[in-house]
Length: 66
Picture 1 (cartoon, rainbow, N blue to C red):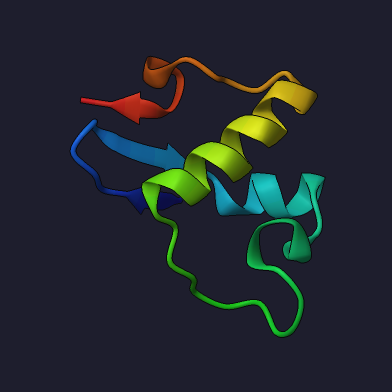
Picture 2: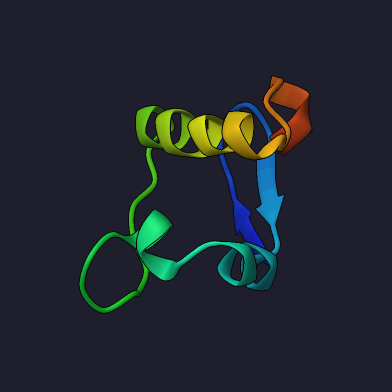
């Protein structure tokens, strides 16, 4: 389980679930996968864009839990 803390409420996701569905490079980019910084703009662009395509949660409370 991966928890990303932020002011709108923590975002919790299952890394194994995402890794199984998508390639490492989809989130981590090229090269050796590892930890990476995921700021608000990047998360909203990358995560919400993918969620729209894959019918994942898009509204704020779909990912952010207060």
